[in-house]
View 1 (cartoon, rainbow, N blue to C red):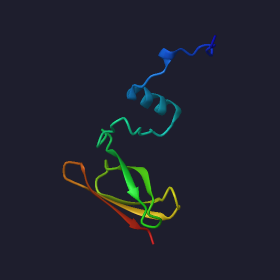
View 2 (view 1 turned 60 degrees about the horizontal axis):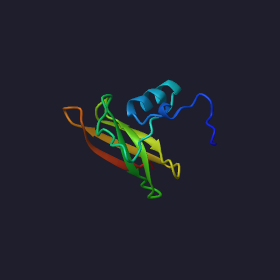
View 3 (view 1 turned 120 degrees about the vertical axis):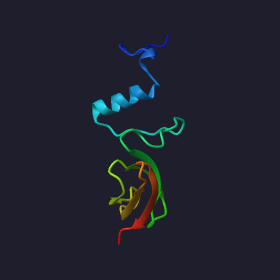
View 4 (view 1 turned 90 degrees about the vertical axis):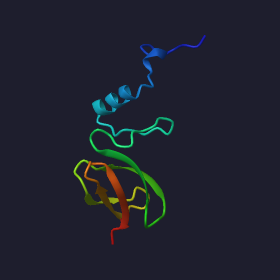
Length: 106
């Protein structure tokens, strides 16, 4: 007979994205984007998931772009090789992300 851990029932697990989001917020975790779950193209707070290609090492990595403040330029380190990458965000007059440029920071 297989024993279960006390206090854990199969119905306690959830695949509801809203529950997962609340748990992440409660513990201060960054959200995880699951491939089988379609992510919104532009969240209500202007944060957009984005896959960037490093101009130094050529590796792809996932990041989040914040288009809520309009067009912007900022530097973020590559998550693979740690080189500085300059992101240039172009936001249209409706507040939607129009174009993203990924440039070498040197």
